[in-house]
Image (tube, rainbow over all chains, first blue to last red; front, side, top):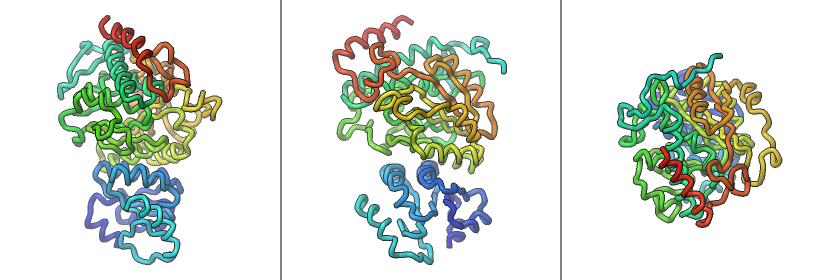
Length: 117
Length: 305
């Protein structure tokens, strides 16, 4: 799915925090950025990508829960086009299959909805 | 290393680049410009009765060097007030959000927006807002949360590298911000991706909101810390001396495959005699009485030349 999207959109970049999306990196090595476990840095860097017209997809575990300040201040308030593909929770689902722990999604969904709806 | 003397440059004192923006190569003209920016910043902060005097005063020389400076190789920063956001421009992120009025003054002077907007700083419905992510012409990213700016600059620099462009990304960090953990994450990532288009200026004024930095939470030697992360560090012993700043920026442009940190030692509240070096003026605007003392001095500086 994400490979199809990568093929369709030339400006799509994947920022990942240790999250086993290496397959995208094999097909699109110059659009795949690993950030290790630096979650908050990754979320703010996504804002930088979006400012230059890229379409960053953040992949990680519990991104919204860990970096709420960054998601709120760097992405939501400036209204930037960033997608978050959260693996355990499901912050903003991007058509990704197989979310295993849907129950945890509440923890991520809550702060997002409370603040921005 | 041999230091290059700026006096050896063969440019005229005042010149216009190809977009018609006035640039300066000599320190005296830049100092006059800095005094103008300082005055309009103080007026804006004082009028709004909101803002950080000490914090804004210490970065003014850096901003003026970036926006008005000219090196032998060309202007320090490429930008076009008529066409903000065009693909050849260099990007600037002010991570030190408290100093935003200083940046707004520079941009107003360059013609990104009208000067009169400065009178309405941080008012309801004004263009020049002090809100996170506010859209202002000429401002890449308006950041008022400490520690996020370097990461955003990293994203910009990575994105430019990805497109194989030569545009540069400048960012100014306060030294109090270096206490944030996210800054060190960004430093690690910048060195990992070998971002030689990322130039980070550190405003080392040694003061933060509470008190002196060394008393609150000392950050130690930045030279050792940044170098251990794989950065190139260039020290500027006086961040208010344009000759030193321009030489440092000139050196920064020659570095390859390493991100660059220009560590400037500055004085908080510079240019306002009674506020210099004091943490009590860090986060407060000046009152009308204090302004009446400061304005004649700065105007004298501007008119003398």
